[in-house]
Length: 201
Image (cartoon, rainbow, N blue to C red; front, side):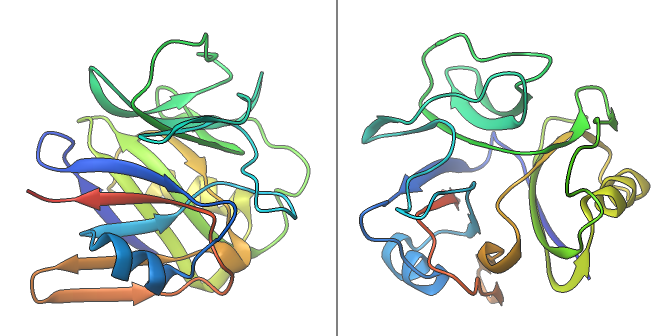
């Protein structure tokens, strides 16, 4: 089972939150931030330091991936998802950003190259962008799926994805939606040092 939120960047605000010294559970992030949607962020090491670049209102953390992965970003032009393979980060100013890997769907809606571990089944989380420019936050929280199967499944949906990158899956997979009376929570099993949060006006 997959659960997805499709979000128009013109109607919502995206924020990246990062707390490596004190990671929180998904419910704790929800309580603190009160977002409309929140999803787990990218990969991190044993010290809860993010792998790749993180940018938020507190500053710039880590180093950009080079030649692999992708990035969710917000800049003066708005929110988008970007391939770091076909569009490497050149140090341009960003308001919010979080990097992760692997790239699942390359720019233009084609399968990205597969690598080690693509056949291993696990819980999954994804950030993508459709051809209309909407941001897609998606989790497979209850079943297990390989990255290779997930690639094909994403292209077979009606999400019309132009690009997608995997976030940190497995025990980190978590998504919560709070839209008025509509409440859905798929809790992560681990503490999360980073999340992508969405706020409606």
